[in-house]
Amino acid sequence: MAERIDLNADMGESYGRWTLGDDDALMPFLTSANIACGFHGGDPHVMRRTVALALEHDVGVGAHVAFPDLIGFGRRRMAATPEEIHDYVLYQAGALRAFVEASGGRLQHVKPHGALYTAIVDSSEHAQAVADAVAALGPDVILLMPPEVGPAAARANVPFVPEGYVDLDYDSSGKLVLERVKQLRDPQVTAERAVRLVRESTVPTVDGGDLALQVESICVHGDAPNAPQIAQAVREALGAAGVELVPLAELRAVARAGG
Image (cartoon, rainbow, N blue to C red; front, side):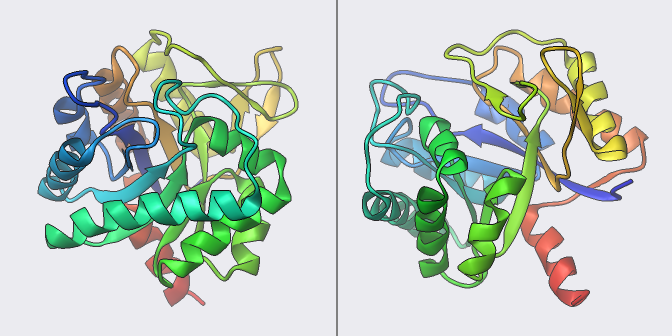
């Protein structure tokens, strides 16, 4: 059983006068936050406010990077070359890092969003482009992705943390079943999934089977209708199971210290 794990969520996805999610209520339950950088959601003002909120709660700040698809919320696959994806990632993460550093913090990690996330999982070339972009941000910036992206991170010498989901379903092949609109899920059922993932390294699949999954971070979605309740239930259930929640940077610092 893992004794320490990170709990992350996608945040800062409001745009202009349009509000998505309840970041103020969700943030206190997290250890890491993936903040939208303007390509699928977020804008400069939302980025600044969400960074300040994360730092107020001692939550690690990450860039939630996406395809340039604001109208589609980054959930439409685009025909982009590895070079283009490299530049998209560097551009967005650089913008968020400016806000973080201006507020006295540091950029902890990068996590892709939506269709870019699935494109990276499906393509080793795209995965390598993202890993190389993260490497360009400095040696301490972590790439947060599913376990299968780990080899690309290793080739780029990028710190890597594998993550899994408890508020999305997996199919029998291990692929996420993405939702265009987040469903309302039972917080307690979701929390039980989280404890099972940590204790048994498995998640249920939509066909009734089990999927083996080794992760060090659990993601919940900030745009879920009851995201704060889900995050609270997950955190409380993990704490009751004896699992310590820590941000990604602390996980990787321990890993480096251990050789």
